[in-house]
Image (cartoon, rainbow, N blue to C red; front, side):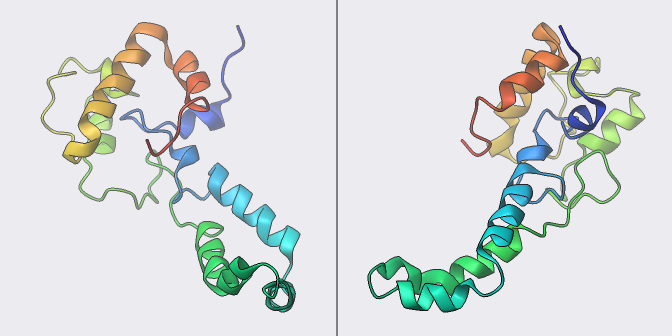
Length: 153
């Protein structure tokens, strides 16, 4: 079995979320795809969108789409393992794993009963499920399964 690249592993947050698929990640797939769409459409597509709107009414929404595309193509977070992380400011996981000399939460003796994550209630079950999977099957296998699941279930 081949090992996952370090760059891919670095984008798996200590809590088990996949930063590489987050809309806020500078190295993420959403950002990369949005940049490619911008390049494909070019800077002057707005003039074509106006013309195309006569037979494709959705093109009237191009200015709003372009604004969203600009935002998706230029996120500001380098992932939860970096000093430049902007996601979930209340999250304590990155600091906690450093203090406990762990790479992931499942490696800590307090897991799964840790009450220090700071994660919102909506993420706690995912945090636990992701870490249990990594503990049972390994981090490389976990990373390989990520592309098979939606990032925002």
